[in-house]
Image 1: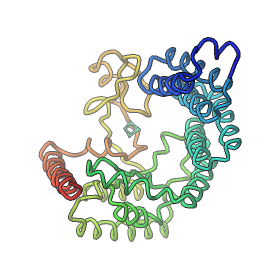
Image 2: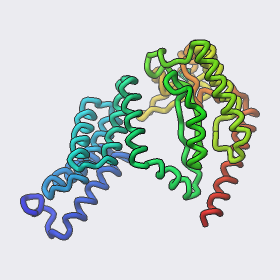
Image 3: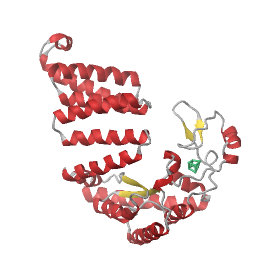
Image 4: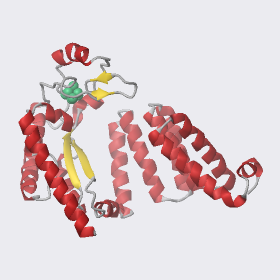
Length: 326
Ligand code: SF4
């Protein structure tokens, strides 16, 4: 090792430690901010890694920068980062790092509204993960006993025939699972809605089997309530769900301190009363039925009964799992 970076980091024995520390700090600041610190540490990690030829640290630094660009909505820069990370994963011949890059490519397709590409990449990644036997990761996390792994599947025209396969896999892995409905509001594309009579009949059959499975699921691993599952089915039958009171019964606080009705409506206000007056009172959007939307139609006592019951089943499960793993 030589050159200006080697001089800067001093003792050669400290080199790998400093390199690792810069890489770790870069990733840490990607998640907790500030972005400037993430960029500074990632830049240093890349310089040091290039100097000593450590492709792994360089991979993670570039991957972290791509995540940061994605979080800031800078898709061109994210694409550059994903490309650089992908090339490093190829150089390292690491299928696992290719999976991490693929995950980011899926996020990028999602951010760009390129659903067909996102789904195709997702399917390829699942095959790759299966080949690598990655299915062992979730059961190992579940066996720690914290009961904090929940898989979520957004049901679309592409996957509705596999609702019970997903539930079975989650139960097999010992993790929780929830289901949401596809939201055309997010993509502007209604072609993934389930609309045809034969599709709805198949979906009804899937839900009937899922509800029967939920009755037998004493550990409560299928976390949607029965009423939410029924209404999710009805959302597809009706092609939407009217009567949304987003802005009044829940709202989103944006990173820059504004209030907006939900994550798919960008009517930003500084005052909730104004938000309710200007948005909620005349809201006709019916284009989602995700978890938080499902709560809006339920009264206090129903929410209390469903959530308190779940809380105690979660606790019993967690305590049981911990006792079992002790
Ligand atoms: S239905 Fe309500 S929560 Fe869903 S996207 Fe429309 S406004 Fe937002």
